[in-house]
Image 1: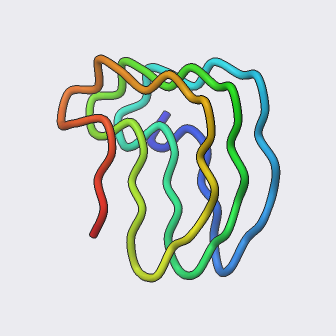
Image 2: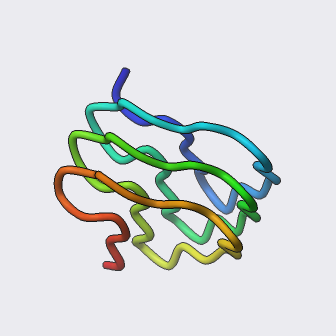
Image 3: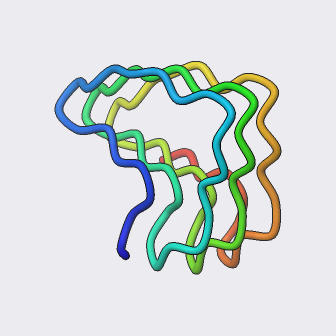
Length: 77
């Protein structure tokens, strides 16, 4: 698996109370103006970043446990 949860082309969505873990790329990727809401998730053990926000990505991340990701827990580009 490459990415865990990928929001694309201004994608929106709500992700609550999940385990998102163990992916080759970021466990959560928020690019291209995407604007999701993530609450109370456990985001861990990615081979890259836990959460990658880039290319005008937005979003609300609230009360998530983001830990033990190889290249860092949150990447803002």
